[in-house]
Structures are given as C-alpha cells and as structure tokens.
Image (cartoon, rainbow over the protein chains, first blue to last red):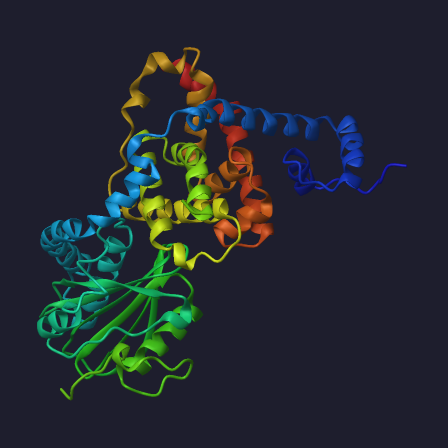
Length: 271
Length: 163
C-alpha cells in the first residue's frame, strides 16, 4: 500500500539527492508516473547534475600539483617571516588607497565621524579577504602593541575575544582621519574574520552605533577622542555583544562575561 | 604524519574539484585550495574531532566568499575562454553552458548545489558548511535548479546563434 500524501517540491529534491526516507520512495515514484510535469523537472535536475559532474569530475583525477602537497604547505608556513616583510611594504601602498577611497565615498563635507566609519569599513573589507597577508605584525610579536600605541598616540592593548572563539591574528597601521589608525584582526575557527579599528577622532562621545552593508556589519563608538569600530559578519546582536566585551576591556571595566588575562587587557592612559 | 594530516591530504583532489567548479578558473581555484590548506594546518589545534572533510569545505567556502566580496567592488572580468566562440558549438558546448548557468547563480545557491551534486555532501553537512538551517539549504537548491533549468531551456539557442 503506497502512501497517498501529495508529494511536495522539497520531497522531489530529497528524492533526486537520495535523501528521501525509504518509506516515501515508492510514493514519490508512483506520483511521478502520474505527474508528467514533475517527472520532467526531476529529469532536468538529474541532467544538470550529470552535466556538472561531467564538467568537473576529472579534476579530482588529476595528479595534485606540487605546490598543493602538504609537505610544500608546511614549508611555506615556515617562511611566514619573509612574507610578513613583503606585506609591510604592500600595506604602505594599499593603506593609502583605502584611506583615499574612504574619503571619496563621502565627498559632500562628511563629518569626522562619517569619515572614521567609512575608513574602518573600507579597511575591514580590504583586509578580511587578504589570505596571505591579513596583518602586518603578528600577535606573537612583542613590538606589535608598543609600535601601534606610539603611532596611534594612545596605549593600546588588543581585547581578548576568545570567549567568542576569536583569536587575535595581529595588527597593522593605516592612515586614519587626522592621524594614523590601528587595525586588529581576529579569526574564528572556520575562517570568519573580525576587525577592530581605532583612530583619533575629534568628536563627542557616542554610544554604540550599528551600521551594515550587504556584506558585513560594524559597531562603532567614540570615547575620549578615540573612535573604535568592530566589524564582522552581519549579525547585529553578536556584533553588539562582542563590541561591549571589547569596550569593557578597553575602558578597563570588569568584563561581564569572562575574566581576561591582565596582559591582554586594553587600557588607555588619561587623554 | 598524523591522522589529521592524512585526512587533509586525502581531501585535496576533491577540494580542487570543488574550487574549480566554484571559480571556473584553475589558477584561482588552486590558490584557494592552497590557502585552505595553510589555514587548516595553522588552525589544527582548533579542530576538535568531527569530519575533517566538512571542515575543509567550510574553510574553502568562507575564503571564496571573502574573495567574492573583495571582487564585488571591481569591474567584472570575463574569462578569456568566453570569447572562444568555436567552443560554444563544439563537443564541449554542454560543459560551457552548464558553466555559464552556474556563473549566473547567487554565490550561496551555487555553493549549495555544488556541495550536494558534485561533492556528495548531505543536506545536513551543507547546512553546517554554510552555517544555515537545512530548510535554507533546500530553498537554495530549489532556486538554483529552477534557474539553471530556465537558462538551459531558454538561453542555449541564443548562445548557439553567436556564431
């Protein structure tokens, strides 16, 4: 006795992809025998699958190129230092362009805060897609924080975001509104990236402001003449919680979620 | 070589296939695979059991999305192959058409379809890779298939006429 419940479109997909529970298979086959249009759709989906496999299956049969063998990849990782040096030079040029684009985007006498936000978003967009040189100086290098603090003009320490599964990769120096800006890059377990951007902004203190575009979101705030922007995948609530954890550490408040180690704490000398 | 490294190594041919289908450019594809491997080895300590293969697909999918984001600001580049008119009518025509059809899809739909059809992942695995509920995977698949069908049904004659 075949189940007579009408077959849905999703069931047809499940059927084609071999995910339909065994009990429904006969029912779908009986349905297809009586519904020519659905049968034609199923046939066309199968034909698509065949075309896709015919087009690309052979690539998995090719010998793996030397540069993709694990031995080669392990070697590449060891020469990271040399890569970082090249990145520092590239960053000088790219950083200049990022600042310029940021300004062009809001040409009609933008406020400093607008320029700040735009710069932060341009920097985020540009550097999260950098695979080999996302940062200029690695988190493990001792001079990262002293150097960025000196250039940005305030004592910086990068917030510890491990409570959100984010690991600090490192940072870089960028042109900011009126003075240099610092960008810290964080990465999660499956490659999602977040950045914290900081530069001097001559504007009044603000609370958290959320802004997004089709690709990512950004939470910014201004405190003591410094602007901060946390950017990452578009998830308003998550970005706000990360921003408030970062804010607590930056402003030296007792963190609400997790105790962070003292040397990770980001503090600022009275300005 | 530990189990983790062996599993990663075993997945490389399939990753190359997936990357090629996603990017339709062999150099970009192999760069993506290389970056995926670099990142996987670097984050080995973050991998707590589970399926290495799905995890690698997740990394590659994220990297490709990042790549597309940075491209979205630039003018679109048309691969040189597209001007190869003879190929559009030769024995390879079916392959070219399906490539063009894939190219038209929104990234998330293309990714879902390729993971299911080409890489043989289950809907549940695709949901994990894309970080969305299974229902979303199903609607992406449905939309992808509808669009490809109308492209192959309707556009093919137009392409043939180019010659």
